Image (cartoon, rainbow, N blue to C red; front, side, top):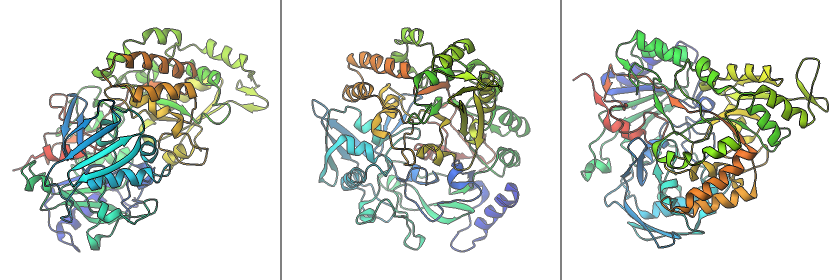
Length: 575
């Protein structure tokens, strides 16, 4: 951004209110202003301002597709509640190898065309036929044998193996998970690897949600509420009261604090604890999920791990990864990095109540594989046993090469990363960090050999997180993949496949979970660090009824697949 963010926001809002071009007048009190969270695609400006293809890993910002391609269902983890949306229901056969999905009558795309089971089937088949290049394509190739529509409201999907979670895994939007279903009449005949899906003259993108893309340039993206949303027409939901959404490019936290303090923005991405305390002190209209108290946010589905490109030496050695693990003091990461506003984790699962049924039953494995043990002496012993010796600088060296741990991070982790780097340096690793705008691309392609990232998987049972480490997602270094831990173990794969075929209420699932987790802990392909909290400031100057611990109707993150539910619940503060 070439001028101060505050001035830019004022210019954008004034332009939106002045009727320039095709934009209609919308007052500030009916407008919601936020920034883009995707540093790699919108740092300084939107890289995808003229594109709207949701299937290209790491190349599209979550500023519309995530909530305007509406799902079959939503899921609220804080109430353990499934919310039927475009689907009215679904039914599996006895062995979970087939599922029939019923579509709600009256659903329409924004161009007036019916939203039908043919769109579901087309999306599934398109992804399956283009694996592994597209997001969710490998999953569809793995699980789907055939997908057909018997009529406009009924989709039949035959699976390659029993999968009682298929609909929940892929077509129930929760947090940042869920397959976007696109309109067949727009995408048919297009190459989904190159299709831009953008033409404002044709009112593209065609979506199902209650907004239309009114303006999209490198400096901003604007969505306006549209008339004729299907949910209002059939009496399913009232339209949102937010009439305009303005997305600005990704900005540094100092600018976010300034804009929240002056009411130029209504919401922004995660803030570091000191900054969010500052904004709470400066603006009495700002609150958080947890009010004015720590942790200043909500527990997310994304527990943090130190990840590796486990295809590249020495990161492919379990002993090396365990040596790094024993050099980490998680309590210090929370105490110093997060100023005590958080908690550690020893497993890659969020601490949601439904998951405790499983994690409470593996404490003996954590004694056998002591992930939580901070022990520099044990770290040193593992390095020596693997042939490493300290050089004149005190750095572990083997065959003339130092043990490097160069952490690729996003701005989100600039609070804990320096603490982690210092801990590793004290243990003899050549540790450092870098924070670049292309950090996500570096992780997806494997260029990042070590990094901090979250495990966006399980919310109800452990299968979803464990599948992130399945070797079906492993691609060679240089080839992008949506799940980029790059670790392989065939025995683990087989157990995870069995978990995927076992119903969540089947008692056998716990045993399979224990076996798979034992392999995972033994090899430690990633090092669990901390439970993750989204610390999002909610500015109530113009909008109220944000999600909170007292009213957890959904999580707040506006880049997640559930953002539509927030927009439908927000109420104007003024009049």
